[in-house]
Amino acid sequence: MSLNDDDLLKSYRWMVLTRCFEQRACDLQYQRNLPELEHASIGQEAIGVGACYGLRPDDVVHPSLRTRAAFLLRGVTPARAMAACYGKATGAARGKETSHHMGDKALGLVAGSGVVGGSIAVAVGTALGCKLLGASRVTLCFFGDGASNRGDFHESLNLAAIQKLPVVFICENNLYALSTPAAYHLPIANVADRAGSYGIPGIVVDGNDVVAVYEAVQQAVSRARQQDGPSLLECKTYRWRGHSERDLKQGSYYRSSEEVELWKSRCPIKRLREHLMAKGVLKEKMVEEIEKEVSAVIDHAVEFAEQSPFPAPEEALENVYTTQDGSLR
Ligand SMILES: Cc1ncc(C[n+]2csc(CCOP(=O)(O)OP(=O)(O)O)c2C)c(N)n1
Ligand SMILES: [Mg+2]
Image (cartoon, rainbow, N blue to C red; front, side):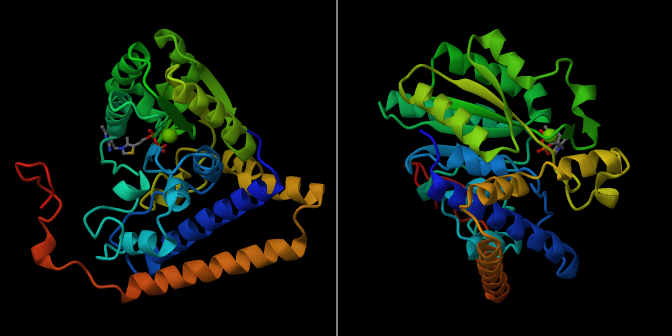
C-alpha cells in the first residue's frame, strides 16, 4: 500500500503537469480572454494526485471546482482539458461547461455544478447505486471547507453512514471560502471532527504531502471497498492564487502577503522534489527534463485548443435532456 520510487516520480510529474496546465490557463485568461474563468488549484496539487493515484479505473470521482489534478490523472488529456477552457467542441464538456465542472462518464468522472457542495449528495447517490448493483466500486467526493457548512454535507454524511456506503469524503480545506477565512465560518478547528456526529472516521491530513494524502485515502478506500462504510478526510492546504482570476490582486485584500509566502514555502511539489533528491531518486537534470517535457505537452494542448472549432449552434440542446427511454439526445 506504500508508494515506491517509480510511483513517487510519477506523482511528481502529475503535480508538475497540473501546475503547468493551470499556470498557462491563468496566463491565457488575460492574453486570450478565455470564456472560462480560471479557479486555479495551484498549491493544492498533492490532494487530487495523492487521492486518485491508487484508484481503480472503475471507481467514481466527483471533483470539486479545485480538483484539476483528478481530471488529468483519470485520463482527460491536457488537450481536451485546455479545449474545455476555450469552450471548444473538442473539450471534454463539448463547450457546454467550464473545465472544472465537466465530467467524463467513461473515465468515471461525474460532472459537477456551480452549486457549492452540490456534488456531495450526488456522490452519495453514486455510492448507493454501486452498492445496490453489488459492485465493489468506491466513490471519491471532493469539496471545499466552505461546502462543509452546507446542509447537503450533513444530510449526505448521515445517509452514507447509516447505509454504510462505499464513499470517501475529501475536504480540501484551503482556509478560505472565497474571501471568508475558515476561522470565521467554522466554529471548530477541524472539519474532520464533524465525522464524530455520524460515527465514521474523521482524519486530518497534511494536504501538501502527496504521500500522506495517498496513504490516508488508500486506507479509507479499502474500508469502503470492504463495505465498512464512509470516511471523512480533511486535507489542510492553501491556494496560492485568488479564489478565481477575478479576485482583485489575487485576494490580497483579505489575506496578508506573509501568510501567502508562508504557504508557498510549504509547496507540495518542492517538498516531494527535495525528498526525492535527498533519496537520490531525482537529479537536477531530471527535474529540468520533466519541466521541459510537461511544458511541451501544454504547448501542444494550447495549440489543439486554439485550432479546434466552437460547437455548432444546433448542438446546444444535445446531451442536455433525456428521452423517455433514458438515453440522451
Ligand atoms: C450555494 C452556493 N453559494 C455560493 C456560491 C458562490 N461560491 C462559489 S465558490 C464559493 C466558495 C467555496 O469555498 P470552498 O467550499 O471552501 O471551496 P474553495 O473555492 O475554497 O475550493 C462560493 C461562496 C455558489 N457557487 N453556490
Ligand atoms: Mg476553501
